[in-house]
Length: 69
Image (cartoon, rainbow, N blue to C red; front, side, top):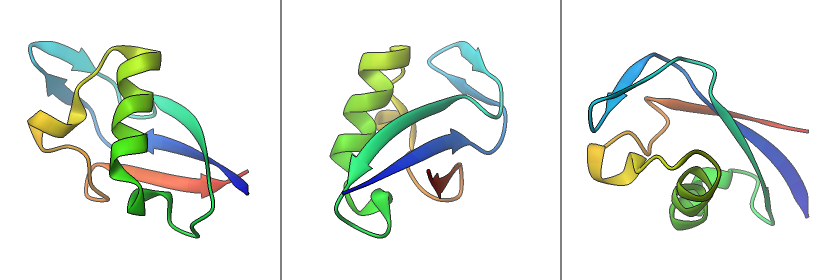
């Protein structure tokens, strides 16, 4: 199982809260692309940063990038 760091690419506004580009979380995944587990990424951003990227439409590779650690 690999560990990935997922970061925001750009600054964004999530429900009135300004988020800088580069905000990151770490997840482990059995997939080569952790974005295949969108629910896991969503839950991690909610737990760590309190951000709901899913309802704002930011939970995709247009707004997020990842790298394997």
